[in-house]
Image (tube, rainbow, N blue to C red; front, top):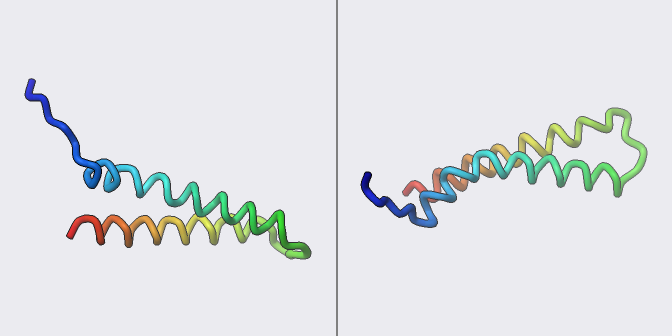
Length: 65
């Protein structure tokens, strides 16, 4: 087998689509715990996950150029 070493850019492109939604969900939970009085509390977690997913997609497209 050939000894192929991955660059940092290749590693980031592979990891970002999975890590960014998790970080976004974490920010949704943090925002939910710091603010008070929401009628649908888990909506903010979902918004954080979608925001993280979108940020991950944008970062991957920027790194692919």
